[in-house]
Amino acid sequence: MAPSAMSRWTKALSEAQPVPYWLDDPGRPHPEPALTGAETCDLLVVGGGYSGLWTALNAKERDPERDVVLLEGREVGWAASGRNGGFCAASLTHGLSNGLTRWPDEIHQLQELGARNLDEIEKAVARHDLDCEFERTGEIDVATETYQARELRDWYEELREKGLADGVEFLDADAVRDQVASPTFEAGLWDRRGVAMLNPAKLVWGLKRACLRLGVRVYEHTPALTLKQYGAGMAVRTPYGSVRARKVALGTNIFPNLVKRVRAYTVPVYDYALMTEPLSVEQLASIGWKNRQGLGDSANQFHYFRLSADNRVLWGGYDAVYPYGGRVRAEYDDRPETYAKLAGHFFTCFPQLEGVRFTHAWGGAIDTCSRFSAFYGTAHQGKVAYAAGYTGLGVGATRFGADVMLDLLAGEVTERTSLEMVRKKPLPFPPEPFAWTGIALTKWSLARADAHGGRRNLWLRTMDKLGLGFDS
Image (tube, rainbow, N blue to C red; front, side):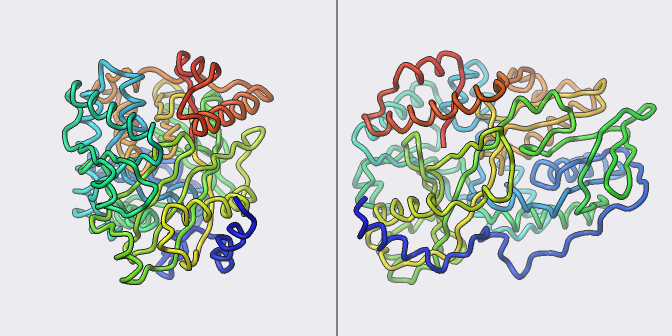
């Protein structure tokens, strides 16, 4: 990248605020008071992101008389649930390719359950009046290299042969550029119904309001410090109080799990995004995008991008940064060198938008596991359930995970709990320095594959055979 181009593109970042666009909202609700004193309940939910809020909401909808308490260490939605791209996908398996590779015998069932889950989210948005800018526009996976276009067409043919192409359409270069006008697009695969766009912060705030209306007692700025058995139930200690509960659901995801043996299954990967100022009518017309789909490119180091309700472009992805030791720290949320890189990629994709400014630039941690999709389990003789490892596709899948946790806590054998995906766990990550070395080698290999026509080296082929993965 020439220095002149770099300075031209990074000038667009000069006024960008280093805060998540979605959370920078004057309508942001005030937090609920912290817990002081002792509480008792039927179900304690730990974590105030999507995972915890869907669990609390679904628990009350299953049984309105159930006494439910939710604890959040800071404010609901402040972490991954309030700073993601707002892609709400039907997939429960981090995409169809990952699901087909790992659970080929269950893939049709998993696809059906995922579609049903997305439908239920859409119904909940209407039922609880969740004003979250929900748009069921679908998503286009775009190819930006000739080999990627060939792979997309081959993948589409494979989906047709396996009966998995319902609602999916292959777009050649002319067809995909008719949808969104970028000179870099060579082909596309449009999933018309399997993805919705939404405002992630407004969804989390709406879920909080719905929980409160149904009688869930929500305490913010109340981290759960310890989890121990207490008589026939469980007890959680907080800075100024405690909660005794019959059952506990853990939705803490990337943060240290209160069941310590679960911690080795996830690592934090930091992801970054930019948001532009609102596009003018002329700027929007120059790129088309009349059907407002979400988009993602097909590289290993991929970008995701979409339009907001006020026609800003969110542009994120590419760099996936693993901090040595798997530490989650606030200083990792801001990474100017990645913002500069993303800005250059944005204007390469949309040269007709040169002159557009970015208003927000931010990052956040994703809870990644070695199989890329969530895993589930119980502890303390079935009195505690957990779900984690959503790897960036948790906006929709966390609702399914909430139902899995509730099924597990009830001791029920259901269609969900009978899945191999639910019954078996991924491989844990090794200790340092092996985790950092392995992830660094994998990232280097993925970048090399992107630069060499998608050819995967020996390391990546070995990881594929072992069922391990890592991407941006």
